[in-house]
Each structure stands twice: as C-alpha cells, then as structure tokens.
Image (tube, rainbow, N blue to C red; front, side):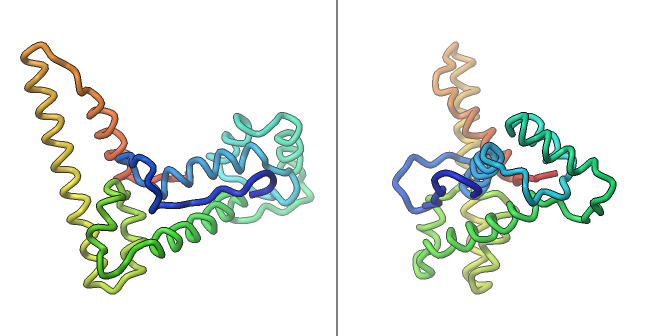
Length: 186
C-alpha cells in the first residue's frame, strides 16, 4: 500500500458474510484503495485494464505523470503490468492469510463461513491443504448453490402469489455467480 493505513484481511471475523468470494472482495477494495493512493514513481508498464483504472481513479496530476512516462520512447516497455504484478503479490499473501485461519481438523465448518469462495481462489486455497482436505471445498460451494436455488424458487413461487418480498436473494445469487468466475484484472 503506497500511503495511508494498511488494510487487514480477517476472514474469521464475525462481520456479516456476503455470498461472494471474500478474497475477491478484499482484492477489489485493496486495488481501488491502492489506485487512489498511487505514486507515479516506478510505474513503467500498464495493461489495458489498469490504464483505464488509472484514468478513472487516480488523481489527474499523478495519472498525467504516469501516462507521460508510458509515452516516453526512451523507456523500454516491460512485458508485465506493474500494477498486476503488485496486486498478484498481495493476492497471494491474502490467500495464505486466508488459509492460515482454517483449522485443518474442522475445515468443513471453517469453509461454511466463506461459502462464496470463487473457483480460482478455491483452487488456490485447496493447494494449501493436503489433497484429501482440499477436495472438501467444492461440496461446500455446491451446497451453497443449492441453498440459493431453493431461495430463488421460493421467490418465484411467492411472486406467483403476488409477493416479491425477500428479493434480497437476487443480490446474494448475483454475488455468488460473480464469485464463481473470479476477479480478473484484464
């Protein structure tokens, strides 16, 4: 984090859980905060996604300095986006932090707290456990999908009776579906 207060990741907190991936949620917030406090020094290459993010989030003076540097022919273009590299390092660290909160003997119960883990982060989390434990992640996600299906069917049944309350299930289902595709930077 370039400036300001450091963000902390606590998947074991008692804060309300969303149906989305907690790692993705943290990384979205981290990336937005990182861009809002970005220093123009050290940025030599940006992917298309981060060029647009810099243009829309970073203050105009800092963005102009970054873009001028990128337009300078005397600076060789590097292969990787500097922001993607920095964000990936942070993401790997957060996956390790996330895994450290699990008790291997109670993995199933621990996973119920993060029912919206995306497929990409589920695979990353699985790799931190022995294979026999890692394969327990997928059924937790499938059970949550089943519960969301039941809630959506209940909403449809209630709507036939003229009731559309409990429509919050739509947001929970949308968050879960988005989480299953993971957060891509490009």
